[in-house]
View 1: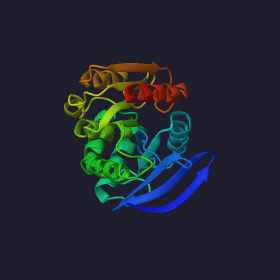
View 2 (view 1 turned 90 degrees about the horizontal axis):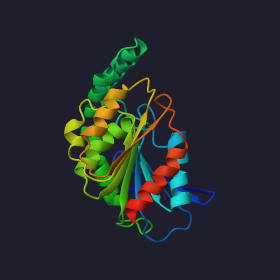
View 3 (view 1 turned 45 degrees about the horizontal axis):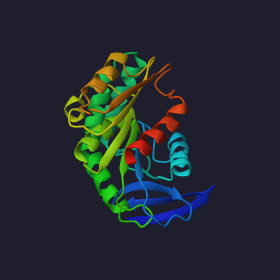
View 4 (view 1 turned 120 degrees about the vertical axis):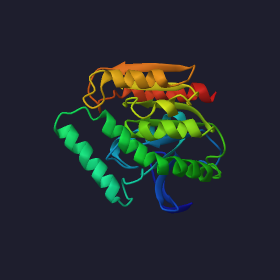
Length: 243
């Protein structure tokens, strides 16, 4: 892991890093020197590791929860090169959305294409970050909506170090097999009027999760309109399951 910049603002230190060819960012409390719980945060499709919503949520997790937070640029996103195959898949998805079609299958195809790289990358970054003195090998949680959920479910299913996850804004297409392997506590967010993911698909994904401890939070509004109160709810959720 190679750190390439460090800044501090309002009690939060932000460090940009690379691990191999994977760019990421780590947020910790300013002046932190001791281990703390870690949240891995997956961004949505077309976004990147320092998208405004990601940064705002990460800063709250640090300042209010005392957590460390890591975000990565997903494959073909942010500072990473775009492959021709991904460009084709993304163009097909955009075309379906513009035509008002049900793009559930297209979303599943895109996430399946990306997750083969994303899952081992997340696992390698988790190992590297836990070696830092101000993170350590403590409790780990995962937060990811939309594409962050599509890549997060296979990751959580494969990674025993993750103790709890906040997921949502996605349907079951292509994910039922991985969801059946997720047994950690889950908070699942669903937007009741989602214009991208049919409600029935979101409910089917929630149903497919094998977790004995899972709760569904449904809010009115479209795909990107999660209320800010859900950030505070996620903080309390992680704190409870981290003990």
